[in-house]
Length: 404
Image 1 (tube, helix red, strand yellow):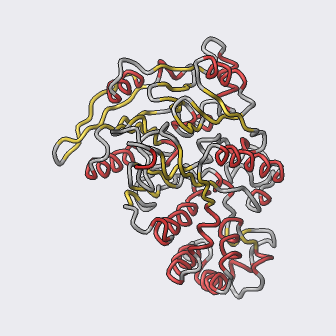
Image 2 (cartoon, rainbow, N blue to C red):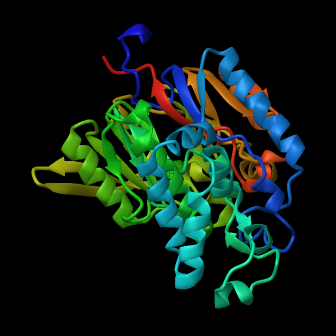
Image 3 (cartoon, rainbow, N blue to C red):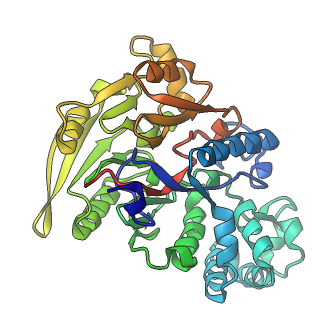
């Protein structure tokens, strides 16, 4: 199919020409980070906010320069909040936090209901302190410090890959594992369920289901998914997703890939990403170590085979003799670890053999260039403090299809 014949929304691979993507420009929520709370909010440091915004703006500019439509989550959310049904849904959801208690929850619902859409969208992402909220008759409020949060900030919102993922012509609003991130899917769900742009898009998943995060879901090729199982995505989540995509008929093979359950490898896309139809950049030590279970439909059930070496199973599922790999420092373990930690594997393909990467990962980028991959570099010294690269910061909503 030509790009012009492609559907308005849909993703069947990691490398089809990127046409539309959802981003979130970091803002006031990053200013809530302090040395006291950054760990609980899943950041490894306290970023310089203005520089992080400059870096993100450069990322968005590179996408626009290459013909990609950039949709901003906060703008879509603000537009949704013009609708009473969306406002009520998000207000009820936030005010129902059991930590608030009945009185403060009721007062918070009234407070949010009175805000204009732009301010409401900002509060939902940036959070709200006791001092900003004002007086209350609740015991919970009385016992809070002035700077304590009535609504927690969501500094990880800029990693839009995790809270939703497109599979074919449908979208999965995911189930985030970490408490600091779970409300992100409330906001993403509001966008996909209430924004006119997505009114007719089929919904595959929802936050009430088993834990599943978009950073673990790689569309290796049309009909083939690889899903990481580790810190953020559970085996039950993979099985649930597999059944749903098999029912829709858009996927014929799901590879469940166990990954180490630690901070450096929180998602599969921190270990490997596709940069071409049959080429992958991968953390060198993982190339031989990664295994996978192959899941296929079997009537009303699923069939599970394996485990076997992931790269071999992926090549068979894609239908190629082998997947060509680019290492992040094949024999240099120290460099490989450094560049993997700095998201050297977390590239975003704009089309086959064209990818966006952080400029700091010079060894990996050099290896990609020598392999014939055009690398578009962006700064990421501040953005990277949340442990996410270009792929983490982007949720493709439309790619030109590779199938057909």
